[in-house]
Image (cartoon, rainbow, N blue to C red; front, side, top):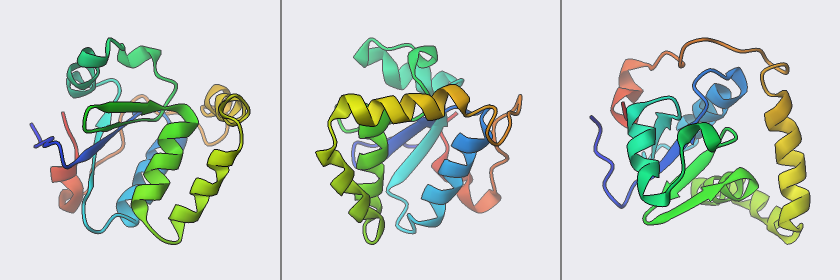
Length: 137
């Protein structure tokens, strides 16, 4: 089991979704300091991490962020992740001026169509050996 100390933010993602796995790969590539940890929402780790929030993993759309004692979901999670990645990705945070219902509407459309856009897998992404310590099981 990976260390999920409070100073690490944990990104929960749909391990069966190409789109979500692509997002995880993007974050890993742009997070050289290793601030983020990852857990597929289908994992025991996701279930354990979400328990204090009273949320079941299958109730999540696709991406969620646990940072300290807070849980961000939907567009809020994406914006917070981009902000933590630093420049130039921090610039995406300006989208926070768009009302959450509108942002979440667009996010919801992507979630509903994510398996059709780039496809779907029955398994979680293969973890490269150099990234293995960033994934919770």
